[in-house]
Length: 87
Ligand SMILES: [Cu+2]
Image (cartoon, rainbow, N blue to C red; front, side, top):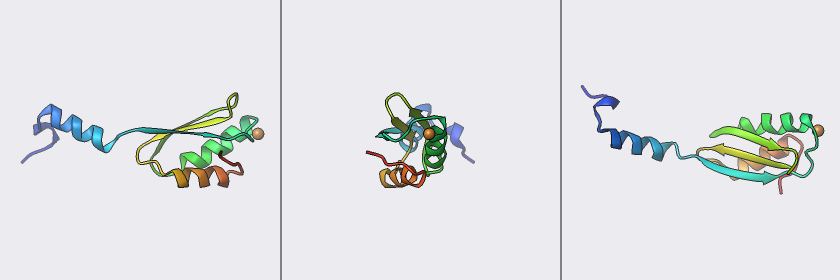
């Protein structure tokens, strides 16, 4: 019988890092102007597979998405779905 804890620490950690590599993509969405926009965009974007977190900054009109294996096209269409356009 073997389990995860039988493996040398470094092997498990490397495997873990490789499978869960986090990436970050930032989109400029100029039409976002209020709290409602923030919720609409982050609701849609957070449903895209692989997305771990969505941060909307109304000052800079940016949406920062973090996650693993992020799909740029899927994220853009989610923003579109919410009624906004990503530059
Ligand atoms: Cu709004």
